Image (tube, rainbow, N blue to C red; front, side):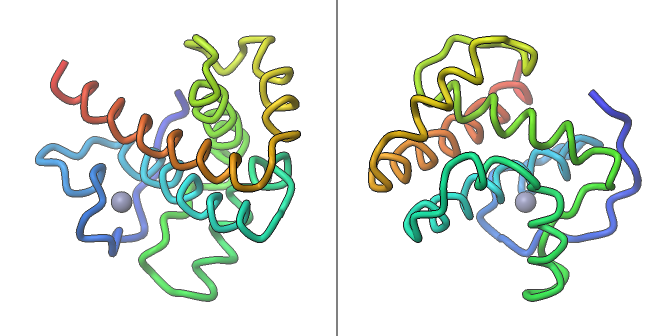
Length: 144
Ligand SMILES: [Zn+2]
């Protein structure tokens, strides 16, 4: 887990399960960034953007998104971008059924390659599920 820099944004999603939690810790901006990417990923999959493209360069995507839509977009510091991509891939691999607990699990690549061959419709379902599971996981880790 990388150390977090000072958050420089305010999540503008009033229903964001991460940012509306009673206790927000320093990792909240990073988790919110992952959830934001998963949610945007479903729209990208609808546009038939390949899964590997959706799951890479998330930090760059978020910073461009903030330029377009403004301050409500979480943009982690550049040094966290690689971590962000790895966590995103882990979240989607888990949604695809992999029991991975670490971003270093060597099976993630294979699972994502298989997932990328699914139809766009099924990729949307996969990203939806990943977002749902990720939000749930964050809720559990807060109460644990
Ligand atoms: Zn948020």
